[in-house]
Length: 292
Image (tube, rainbow, N blue to C red):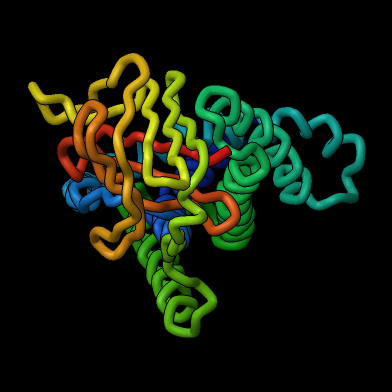
């Protein structure tokens, strides 16, 4: 493949990648509807709104990075096969190459932050579909009408396609929400019997809720008296607990021991959790306990 063809494909791939990013973000946002936000506020949403002001500058850069780091390596990987088996469609080979490289990139967050590998790999593979199709359309258009118009016309079409994809995903998400296909997360309603037991968290935290209302706390996080973030109640302490409700969630109200704290229910009925968000609701210190 000549350098001129590579450059044209890279330009088209960067444009296609940039066009799909707002719609991809919207897909992710709709996907969080059935996940617990742990009481986090809307500060992150305001940050996203501020970022939207810089989308015309940010999207082309992100599209180019995605093309260079994900798409081009995948295309180069399958180029020998595409030459050896010319009867196959080029875009199919490129989709396969992008899927392979996407699987490699998915391993990075899976190992670093314990993201689910299968879901992350599907996301990476999906982000390579539209740019490949966009490159194919650009190649076909160039073959029929000659080279495309200037940079301004190309990016105007990019903005139109990006807006169309965004509106299509938005309408689909709204329809899925209205029809009940996409359900909002509801925390479990834990009874006193379900709350009774041993709960573990990070850094060796352990909370024992005994049947008689007695609580045993071992290295459990508590509010920092000198600030908003969490502190650790070192050692073993005893107190009492009662089942209660706060902000529409069932949970555990602890008294005695180090300090009074309300742990709200999260997770599911089969895999319940208790959590506290210390400090600022928009960017607080989240601590989670899981039941044995």
